Image 1: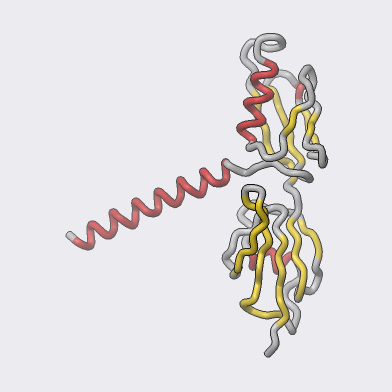
Image 2: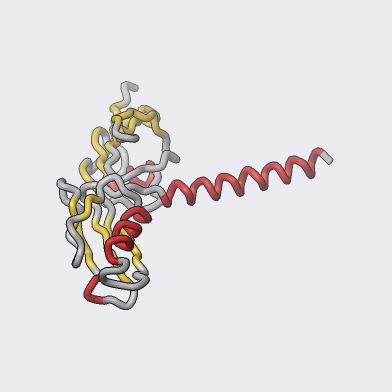
Length: 177
């Protein structure tokens, strides 16, 4: 009975984790430097690719400028849908996707420090590999990530499995031994 309970419990935890991770992926918030594509099904003239500028405003045909910084893709879809509904289209099918994410940055004891294109499901070990690997003097454990969370800048102690986000600043410290 205990073994069966543990298997059920493990399955429940796995299902909750899977749902949580996909929910977190759905909550990606657009920021400066992201490039998005807005498509309206059946209306090729309304397909727009745009890189988000510092102002956060994007132009979309027939609508006023739209402020998109800090919005999820679903929120942008809803704004465009509401703007087109009625006056322009009966039932617009709007889709918004990320064409290119804003970069993340890595500095300190890596071979090629700098900014790199973000990729989905990027972990710190892959980010280090993109930067050419660790130098001989790099610490193997003293790594920090500076990240903005809900408008506040926080420092996170990281390891090789830590998920990287666009705009993260990764610092690889020097080892003293």
